[in-house]
Structures are given as structure tokens and as C-alpha cells.
Image 1: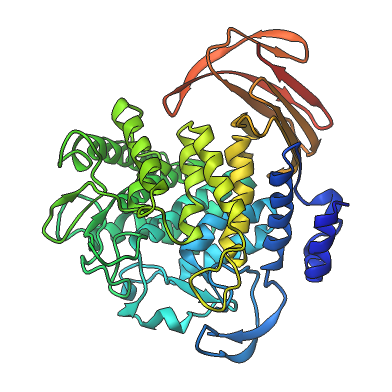
Image 2 (image 1 turned 180 degrees about the vertical axis):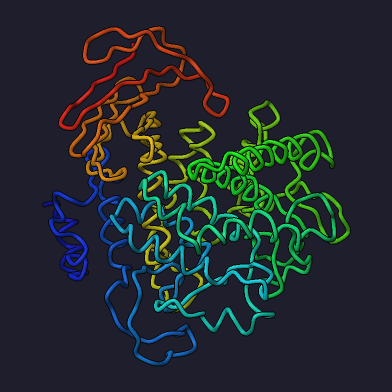
Length: 507
């Protein structure tokens, strides 16, 4: 066993409750980049240490209050400051993929469903911002049903991430559960209608004050320039439309599928042709203030979420905007002070085919794990739960370029390894009820091993560039071509059975 991993298990012995055989059943990596390997092992141990399932304890504890009671905790894990007995909607949305990779499927579903149940007509369909580990409202952030923390993007992200979990698990509960389905329906319809009054255009708004207890349009909680509509809000709304359409399709509801697929297409068109270009032809609009004026300066989350959620069409303008985000986030004044916000940047760049920049921001996370977080009782940024979970998903979804589709028994991959990571193998990747090992050697070779499972899968192995031939287990296969977020890729689709290993190589 890795010595670093052994230290983690000694430090957090309750991890063993969630890993029947830590060495063989939990996700692992092998790479010659030992910095990444050590960080990944740390993230596995730290992520599992945040699990609260089966515990009992107080609720409503925070930095200035000891909390009260002694209650049984629901299947859950920490999602927010570790000085608070709570999980937050923003945090867990970005922890779900990492949670799945840690085999925390029960926790993911339970927390998502608990948030869905808090969305009511009295709260104008906003879900609560934070819940105690027993599922009750976290009082610090919920004073009353008219006075609680709420941020527009989170309502939509819960819909988007539900679909992503469906793709990872193939679990029909994500599309059949009544509480979840009703939540999706209200968010993509009633929620938008209730929160589209100042600039009537079909885009959900905040109240324009910047006060998170009144309703913020953005995840960026700085109040210097409050927004009515924000780039992260419209981008998350687009992904919610797209995800809801696909879940409706999975339920066999063709009418809803076509309705919301059309809404997604139209919102993306509106964003690229009107919403984001009203100010000038150089930069993208990242929000509108209370006067309805467009803003193009740096807004952190409401600047880069537009890229992260795929609402920007591939174009020279978008490429220039990616450069703007990189330059702004790297500057002394523009770099987000909290590591939570910076942890989204690797995903943003990887999705947009910027491999070196994606790895740069992953290294930023790895290099700053021990920096003090801006809340006194949180000992180091690395203890902030989101960081360990997101690091895991940044490896699998980012560096390995893995896209799951458990319901259709499919997966896709593309190597996004920078020069400093010449090779990377990830073992025990759970997709549905199956386990896989995926290996990349630079950008020229990928190997998929089907460890276990009950049905055959189809692997779409992808490579950046224009390659006429892909060698599959030594046999030349004519490559197909397409664009992946604007980048040309070559690929083949290959059937794989349990116990098989398939090697794909390009020149």
C-alpha cells in the first residue's frame, strides 16, 4: 500500500467503513507524475473522511455557535465549511462526480432529493441553500421562508447535475423519483416565470441588490456591482434545459423532450447573438446591472461559467474570451482569493480543449491545499470538502476526458495529458454497475480494461487531431471525424466485453 495512503487511513480510520477493501475497490491511479499521484491519494482519503452516513451529532453548528441536539444523520457528506454541520447546494453540485467516483451513490441521491424537497411555492421554488446532516434546514442560512440565502445558478445546477448522475449511475430513480421530477418541472418552468420581471427575456433573475438573502443572480457574492442577470445564471439555465430535455427523453416523453431541447437551442442562440454581445464586439457580456446595463469586465464565476457550461459557441470570439478568462484569473487583482472558486477553472479549460491551462489550475489547487481558508475554524484550504472531491473529477473527467453513459452502456474518452504527465492510469472507475480501468500514454495511446460488469459496453476512443487510421489491438480501423467543442478529433466506436482490454493507438 502507498505509504501516503497508509497515513491517511491511520489518520481517518472511519474511512474503512466506506471501503471494504481500500486497495482493490476504491478508485486509484498510477502515473510517473508522483505529485499528481500523491494529491489523488490524499483526495481519496480526505473525500471519504467527510462522509457523515450512519453518524449522530448536533445540528446548526457554525463558527460562532456550538449547535444543538443529538440526531441521526442521513446518508450525506460535508459540503461547505467544516466548521458547519451542513452540506450546501453549490458545493455538492460540484462534489457529485467525485462522490460517485468514491462510491457514494446513496449519499449523492439522498442529498439531491433532500434539496429538491425544499423547493416550494412559498419559497418561489428556490431550493434551500444549506441543509443539516439530518436533512433539516440550516438555520444560519434560513431565517424564514422569505429570508434565506438563494442564488439563481444553484437552482439550475441541481437539475443539470441530476442528469450527470443519471449518466454515471444509470439509476432510474434520478428520472422516476416523484420529488426529483417535480423539482425539475418547477425549476425549468415556474421558477423562471417568477424570476423574470426586470428584464423580461426568459432568463431567471436575481433581485439586483447583491444580497444573497434576497436572491443573487450569481455565485459571485461580492456586492460591489450587483447583477440582475448573470453569466453563470443564464449558462446554468441553458444546461438545465438541455439536461431536463434528455431526462424527459429517457422517460419516454417525446413532447417534453422536443419542447426543452428547443428551449436549450433557442437560449444558446439568444445568448450568442444578443445577450452576450450587446456591449461591444470584443468581449462577452457577463451580466446586467439594475439599470439594465451590460457589463464586460471581470466577474469571476459569472465570467467563466459561460465557458464551463458550454453556452458559448466555438468561434474566434470565444477563443479570445478564453484567453481573457485565463489572463484575468491569473492576475494579482483578478485571481479568486478562495480555492473553492479556483477549483472550477480546470474543468472550464479542459472542456474548452485548453489542456495546459487546465493542468495549470489543477496544480494551483495541489500546490495550495494547506493554505488557510478565510474562515477561522477551517484548517487549510484542503480541508474544504469541495477541493478533494473536485480534484478527483478533474482527473477522471478532465485529464482522462471520460464521458459516461451508463443508461446506454457507453463511454467515451480522450487524453488531455500535458507534457508533465506522460502517462496516467485510473482503476476502478464505476459506470453503472460496471468497473473500468482507463490508461493514457501521452496523447497517442489509450487502453480500456473492462474489469467487471453484466453487459457489453461501447467505447468511443477519441484522439485530438486528424488521424486517418486508429490501430485497435493492432488492426487498422478507419477513423471517423467530428468537432469536440470546436476542436477536430478522430475516433472509433468499439464493443468491449467484461474481462477484455482494448488498446487504441494513433501515429
